Length: 97
Image 1 (cartoon, rainbow, N blue to C red):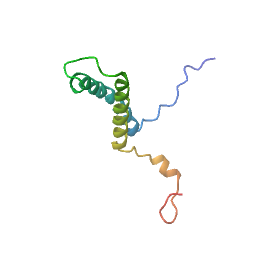
Image 2 (spheres, rainbow, N blue to C red):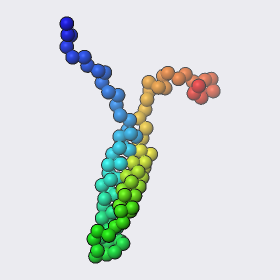
Image 3 (cartoon, rainbow, N blue to C red):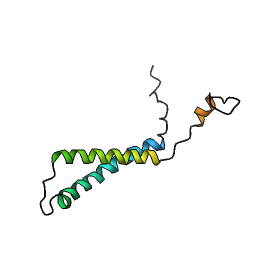
């Protein structure tokens, strides 16, 4: 007999640092496209569109997305994990074992 659908445990919450880094990467891609557009239209050869080298158009989005993801993850506050602190007893000196 079938007892009905089996439900999995609810997913654990995503840490703020992971969420911030993923959001930063997405924002970095949008920012990178803006940077490539500015480089193509105004910085390299003003008035000529479409002359941005392919190496630059690949490297700039990678670098900008990586940098924004790293900065966002670094600057985000850490999610407290009281369940981990309860498992590791402290020594007499107050340091973790």
